Image 1 (cartoon, protein in one colour):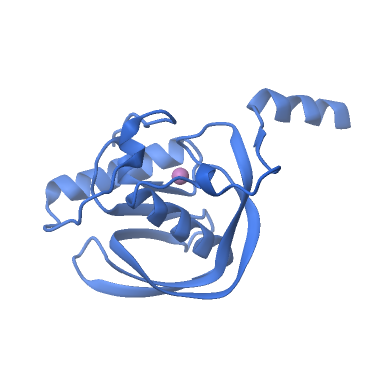
Image 2 (cartoon, helix red, strand yellow; image 1 turned 180 degrees about the horizontal axis):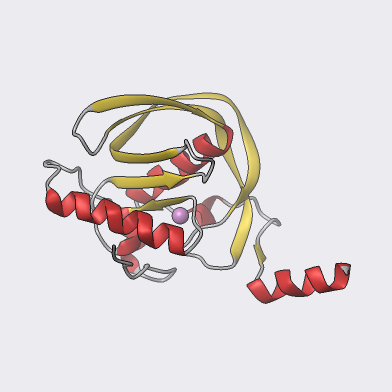
Length: 168
Ligand code: NI
């Protein structure tokens, strides 16, 4: 188990396109483990390898519901379905920043698992939103580019603490 250093806003690596993974070797497996550890420590729902400084097309997702935990290697979104709906997003590379982003309600994604086998996943709602957010990272794009004007907010943990106090 290892926590890796997160890359933050302003780091040029976040604008780079990640490369396909050719071989799923021990190095890739270790990276995936570290990505989960790093994401869990930061209470994130998703993380792309570029966010820990590795330009490989790897995404991890955990919605903390006991079943929606995925490793997507070389993911490709095959189908976007439904309406584009706005919902709030944040990103571990943009601490305390939030905004409404429009994402498709449903996506079908194809990827390799850690075992090297190809699988297809049909996702909707939060999972679909996460997949679209993380796949953007692999192409050098971040949620902040897509925030609906007027919905951007900076909310610090102290703000959340204070608003709780005010309610009591
Ligand atoms: Ni992100």
